[in-house]
Length: 170
Length: 100
Image 1 (cartoon, rainbow over the protein chains, first blue to last red):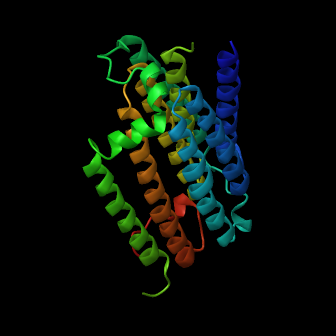
Image 2 (image 1 turned 90 degrees about the vertical axis):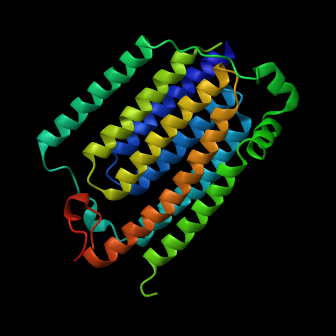
């Protein structure tokens, strides 16, 4: 009962703040609403018993990535961009219309396919005994070791790329 | 117990909000935030499936998606900075040249 109530509250807040992100004029306000969205999603991950991912969501998304966004917004002088609105009314109407069509299509797909499959090796009871973080870590460093190492290379490339792009002169 | 479809509906709505934001807004930073919203919607679907299909693979995939999102944010914001330095704008409509 509590779970359902929490889910409803969290999902309503998530959707409302997500909509506020895209309708706000001020990018700083958009970023703040996006942080609230990420926090609510972390709560939903907790409801799904993915504790490790929930913490990482708060640390990486709400922490690191959004701080990066806020820093860039503050470094750029956006005062004269404040009144930046979509000039074409047709574009606005068409965008919302296409969004509704996309939502309907996703709904149709969810309705038509069977949302079942062969069950994996980790039923929730067993994960609860072992501990979510331990199960994730064990898989990450055994079955998914190669993708994990490639991720580290990707991050290195991103660091170098960001420095090269943002620097005035190399 | 909340059903799988309610999580998937939430994920679909979030994704659609991201797409609409991407189409409507002209400020490139807000367009970037819309991309992050879409990535999060995909993450939510991954974790919901991982829970209901009794597999942890979905959660590991979410970890990789987050790493890619972090890299993308760093490089993308650096590009925005570089563009702003030369063109003095964050309007996506005015960024129509690869070289200037």
